[in-house]
Amino acid sequence: FTTGNVQVQQAATAFWILLFCFPDLGRIQVLIFMGLILGCYWAVASNLTVGITQELTEGAGFAVAHQQMFGIFIFAKLAEWMKKRDEKKNRSIKQDKKIEDIKLPGFLSIFNENMVATSLLMLFFFGIILIVLGKDYLIQAQFMQEGQSFLFYIMTTSLNFAVYLAILQLGVRTFVDELTQSFQGISNTILPGAVPGIDVAATFGFGSPNAVTIGF
Image 1: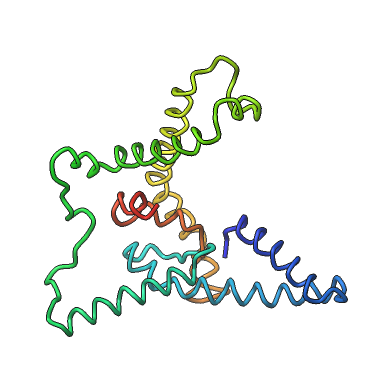
Image 2: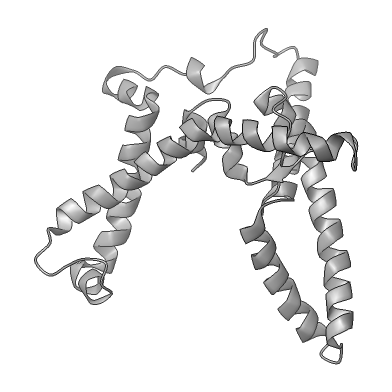
C-alpha cells in the first residue's frame, strides 16, 4: 500500500474515532490498535482489487490502494453477476461492448473525443460552482485578481483540469512501468508474488480514455 496521502488521512480519521470510543487508552495502546486495524484493512482491501486491476490493465502488475477498494470489488462482482445472469437468459452478446463502441449521433459525436468531452464537462461543472460562489467571493479569497475577467477565469480553471487529466493519463503508463519494475526485488525475495498497491489514478491510462469522464 503505497498511497501515502490516503494512509495519512485514514490514520488521522482512525485515531480520532479510536480516541472517541476509548478515551482511556494510552499512546502505545492506540498505536498498536491502529497499526493492527489499518494494516489489516490496507492489506485485505487492496488485495481484493488485484485480479480486477490485472484484468483491466492486461497484467500491469499492481493493485488499487485507495479509498474505494471495497466499492471496486463489489461493483466488479456485481457486473460479473449481471453478465452471467444475461447469459443464462440467452441475452448474451458474442462480444463484450466497450465505451468506444458507442457512437453518438450528429453534433454529439464530438463527445467521442476524450479531451473535448472532458473539457466541456469540466466547463459545465466548474462553471456552475464558480458562478454560485460569485466573482466577489473569489476576489476576496484571492483566487482572482481585481479587474480579471470572470468568464476567462471560469474557462481557464475548467480547461486546466482537463489538461491535467490528459497529462495524468498519458504519463501513468510510464509511472506504473517504473514502479512495478522497482518492486520486483521485493516480490522476488521478501514477499513472493506481492504487487504494489497504488493510487486509483494509475488505472486512468488503461481501458477507454472516456471511462474516466463518464465515471466522473
